[in-house]
Image (cartoon, rainbow, N blue to C red):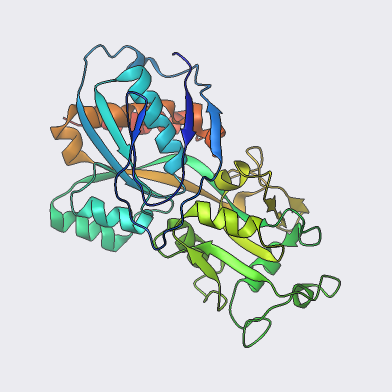
Amino acid sequence: MKRVKLSLMLAGLMTFAVACGEEDEASGTSNNGNNANTGNENTEETAEGTNETNEETSEELSGTVSVDGSGTVYPLMARLAEEYMTTEQEGVSVEVGRAGTSAGMEKFINGETDLSNASRPVKEEELAGLEEAGIESKEFKVALDGLTIVIHPDNDWANEMTEEEIKEVFVTGNFKDDDVVLWSDVRPEWPEEEINFYGPNENHGTYEFFVDEIIEEQDLVEGINLQQEYSTLVELVSEDENAIGFFGFGYYTNNDDKLGAVHVDFGDGPVEPSLETIGEESAYAPFTRPVFTNLSVNAAQEKPEVKDFIKYVLTAADDFSGETGFAPLPEEELNSYLEEVEAIE
C-alpha cells in the first residue's frame, strides 16, 4: 500500500467526507457552535499486513457509503475510510460523521446510514426500532478503548487517584449538598480549590458508559459541563487548572501535550492508561470497553460498496487502531466477523 498522511479535523458541525483525498463539509449534529482541531493530525499510515481479501479485489466499485455515530470511534473509522478510498476503491465515497452513538443510532434506524459506530453495545429499544423499520443489523467490535480521566497538565496533585475516588467525586452529593467540591475534600493535602467537572453529553456512548458502568447509574455531580464536541472538551480541560473530565483514550493521547491523564489505582497500584495497559484482561481492564460498528445487512445486500467497505474495516482495523488511540482486538475475533460478512448475499 502507498503511504498517505491524513489530517483528521475533529471539530465543528461537519460530517467527514473524503473522495480521492479531498474533504467535503456536510451538516452534523451538535449542541454548540465551537469549532476546534483536537490535534489528531500527523497520523501516518503503518498498515503493512492488510488481509489479502481486500488487496486482491479487482472489481472497481462506485457509490457512497454513509457512516455516522460515535465520536470516540470517529478517528479510527475516518482513518480507515481515507485509506480505503486511497488504496482500495477510488470510485467509492465513504462519508463518516460523529453525531454521537445515540444520535447516530437514530439515523441508522431511520435508514439514513449504512453503518453506525457506537462506543457501547446496541440497546434493546434500538434493536426493537430496527426490527420495526425492517432493518437487519449486525454488531461488530472494531477495537478496545480505555476511558481516560483527564486533568490539566499543571495539576501535579491529582495525577494519581483510586478508582473509588474517581467514582465518588463525579457523583452528586457525595462531598457537598451543593456539589461545590474542593480538591481538599477528596484528600486534605490537596488544594482548597473548587473542582470543575467536564464530560461528553448524553448523545455519546462514552457518557452512557461512564454513567451506567463506572458510577453505576448514579446522578452526575451538579454543574458538570457536558459538551457535544470532544475538541471543545480538550480545549476546556487544557485551559482550566482545576478541571477533571473523561473521554476516550484516543482524544487524550493525541493531545497529551496539553492534557494530563490520571493514573488509576484499581487496587494494585496506579495504572497509566496506554496501549499496553488497555485491554479486557489487562491492568486497565476496569476502564476498558470495546467499541463497535453496526452494519445494515440490507445495505450490504443492496450496495456492493457497503459490503466491500465493511470487509476492509474488519480486515484493517488492527493495522490502524494504535495510531488512532485504540488497542487492537484479537485477529481471530475480527476474522470471525469477516466470515459473517462474507456470508451476506
